[in-house]
Each structure stands twice: as structure tokens, then as C-alpha cells.
Length: 131
Image (cartoon, rainbow, N blue to C red):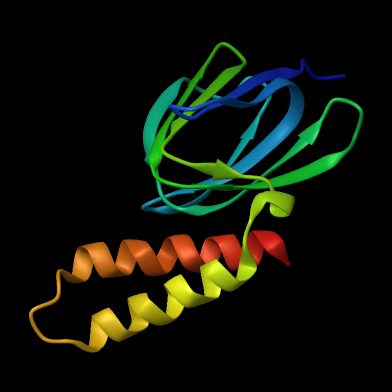
């Protein structure tokens, strides 16, 4: 049996999760990342997404994670992120409203498209996490 990974998910406000996991799936600018035991050391920036992981007891979890940094070293995974929300913490009507606002911003001239796109990604990831 492979070694368990030690996962810590931190935001400026709280420790969202700390425990042993079998696997982790999250996302950076290049796409989905799958982290398993004995993964090579790495540091990467993260994008808003649904982060999923399976704990050592086989339970599958999902959590919305915003922008941040992921570090993998010697079977330890550390996620330092701006915001994280479990599905039960997500206000779906607020997320849908944020999605509409972001879409409207993207259609306006003079808009900072990078900020609007990030707002849209966060809203879509929250909606997907909730469902």
C-alpha cells in the first residue's frame, strides 16, 4: 500500500483541512493536477476550482479553492489560498449573481478583463462545488 499524503489547506482566516489523503486533484493555469503518493517536489500557483481529495479512510471530499499556491514535498501537500469554502458554506444565489455580474463586465468596454475573468472563474467554481 502506498504512503498517505499529508494535506494542509490554509487561508488567511483559518485552517480548512489538515489530515492524511490518498490523492488530491486541483487546478493551475495549465489544467488539472493529480497528486498521488511520492509525487515529485513542486510549487505552482492555483486558479479557482473545485479541489477534490480522498482521505485515507476512502471518503471523497470537494471544496472550492480560490487563487493561491500549492507546494508538494516529501508526501506533504500545502495549499495556501485566498479563500476556501465547503459546499455547505457556499451561498448559491450569491455565486449566481457574481456570475451574472462577471459576464456583464466582460461585455462592457473599458473593463479590466483579467479581473472579470477571475471573478467569473470563482463564481463558476463555487456553483460547481455546490452541485
